[in-house]
View 1: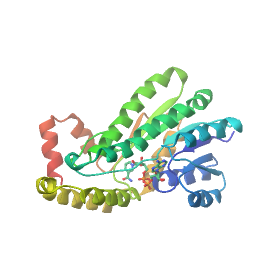
View 2: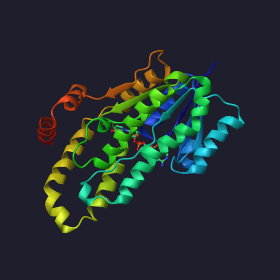
View 3: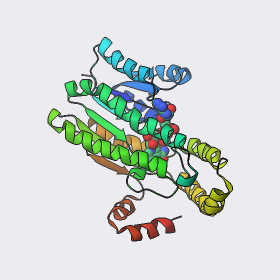
View 4: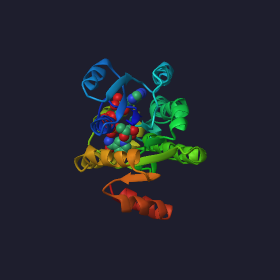
Length: 274
Ligand code: NAD
């Protein structure tokens, strides 16, 4: 029987690429997109049914569940991929920035998961959350994004343990930098935030922020191709033995090391990498 996946954030990047891969492998993909143009574009593909889904809009999330129940569709895999990034020093950040990122990366993920869980319990399906290496190691000037992705790790662990007896598997994918639009969107947002910093914030962090931005630019140049996250997501979707965690990075060993080193050593290492 044809397997079915629901994926949030398929307008571009990681979400769009795994949607196309699954459709090619004869999965039926319900692809969440945020505008009509993306909906029309994805409609052209065989096996893809795009639906309008802003994960922060309750009506969209409810409509998504209604889509499955009204058509009596089963659901095998939910990929919580929708996400956004934001950078800058905590002292210069606005609570609005925190709320916007958490609304998508955390509350949107929780709401879509809880709404679709009845279907996943029925099929003994899977949830795959797209986290980040920023959910394992928190870099300076990445607090908003890192905090949201640390939350994704905690939610994934709790959910996996809550769902074990129901045979619903939970994986979390933790990519390092991947070449997608998230970087340009994040950069634009950081520039907007930077314009609101007062003089004392600029004086305190300006130099370090410039170095951070250069490090980000270098990371983007060396970023992974999106096909590498797709390969791992595909494994989590179809393997009989999906892993609980998948780090997808050129620096997997370093990340693992940073998590076991004493804090002061880890701080020195992280700050020396910029
Ligand atoms: P992207 O910007 O190309 O894709 C993000 C997707 O999320 C887009 O389709 C966008 O429309 C969607 N989205 C944003 N806000 C939404 C909302 N309110 N409701 C529904 N959809 C929304 O970037 P990407 O890199 O493909 O990001 C996908 C996921 O991968 C994110 O969760 C991101 O945090 C994670 N990630 C990306 C990288 C990277 O370097 N690109 C690294 C680690 C993790």
